[in-house]
Length: 102
Image (tube, rainbow, N blue to C red):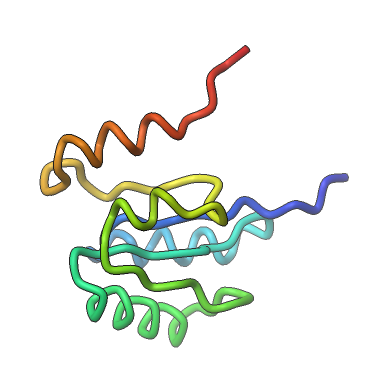
């Protein structure tokens, strides 16, 4: 059995992201590695509030930009709350990280 955990990044800090945080924490095979918002302070606040409500094994990193999260090497999958407020270059960057099916 593979014990490797899927390391998630969360793009956005809206209310629905809290439910996904909890689902990831309770999954048994995944963890949140990083959270991005347009504001570093908002990311930090989100991580602190979510950790208080439902702890991840290690505290996720708060980052202040979507592209910064997408560039991280410790993120295997990205949950994108909404594409509406994310610029087109960032949306394209998020899809370019997807592995091709061979």
